Image 1 (tube, rainbow, N blue to C red):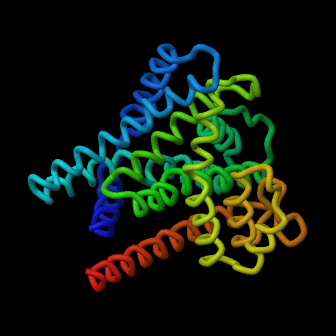
Image 2 (cartoon, rainbow, N blue to C red):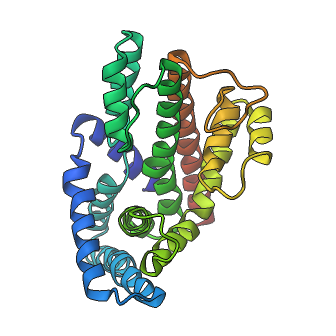
Length: 294
């Protein structure tokens, strides 16, 4: 059922892409800000209570509805799982940016490529050369593939029903709203959201890095993994991706990697698709293991 749900959602979102920002990100941001106004009294424990109320409460609710529907009719529970997975997982949430930037670089339309990258990253990128645009686009794509696909898949497999997918997506979005709004170390309310997502993402992050290494240049990926800046968690995925592609990313793999270009963007797409195929194979094997164990 897990493999069927994932494949169905991936196919469905290719045909009917969800307007993710309008239907998921923006409502979650509004709700997170509302919860913050009700809970924030300037202490870290306020952020903890708010996080558990929002993320923990929504995850528990998703699990309770799943359990109730399973009791009524397993088909209804399956539809509930597919609906929530459709809201939390998918390539189309970011792939249109990557494709448009790739096309603009191939046409030597640097102003358009810069504008698209700035819109995607939410940061100005004026004056960047084509190689820098390609590098930042590959970095953004690898991180987005982890955040929107592979991280969600990992948690979806680990927790019952749709609970894992809901937990991962909400933890990521709440961290973006509370933890990502400011670099102020004294922001005690936001600190718990940052730490909570780091805990939730600890295993998925390593699984994504390992899968990129397996489907790419394993030796170089492991070398980049070992020599990365361990103080930056996101460097795990980028280090593995840099080594797997043989390209320099985020100051990583400086010795053996090549400078990024539009050709490496095509290689990055192929790497992500191979990673997805490996995930689907693993889900198939887990399904067979469950059948034999039962």
